[in-house]
Length: 179
Image (cartoon, rainbow, N blue to C red; front, side):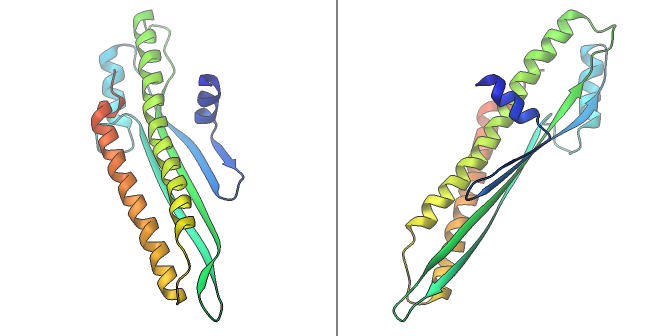
């Protein structure tokens, strides 16, 4: 399972075909250094965002649907989501002068960072799953405008809820910091 997870995270572009689509991308920024201080300083300088997180996962869920109306009601005819997840991580190629202790520390750090960013990915996938469940629970309405508003309201609420869960996750895990 761990090897599969690593393979999935390290694959540049993965599209999983299903009723809904998932697009997973992994980007890297190159870092260098032969000592702990050099490596830490280079990570701080080269990460492509201003916060002090070494990895970053961005996700977005887009949705579309169609409605159908009859003489008595309006109901969902189709509903799809597209979940796009981009994970960005540092990539270090140890120089020959880097000692074994630093290499070992890097390995532990990188595995912890991968696991942390995978947690963000799981939050995004759980949000998409919750959207599917909640939308399936929405019944028919008298007017399609009411149904459209109910679907959009439900999806936006779920996304906001899961963004809050993500903030709590970062606080609880201290953003996956080790190194």
